[in-house]
Length: 110
Image (cartoon, rainbow, N blue to C red; front, side):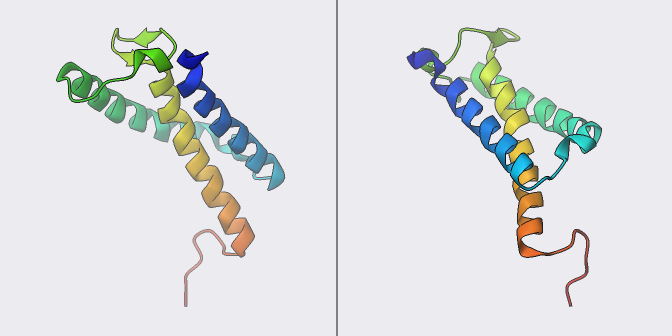
């Protein structure tokens, strides 16, 4: 069970994102194209950075806590999912906070 630790954290983040999205009726999936294009840049930059750091032995993943499935023979699949889920949760949290505070997106502060 220990090798699912990272995956379980990601499942928790996904459950939170799903719950907040439903609770606040954010309809975040309507903007999926924009999110995917933006997240693609994040995945490419930070994925390359992670692979570089792993190759230089500056970064590593505890093999006992991850599923044994790597992308490009170096990057755990959980890390790729992290780069997708965490920005999604940030956007959802931001949109929920806008709704909670009553601030309008793009409104000038005076």
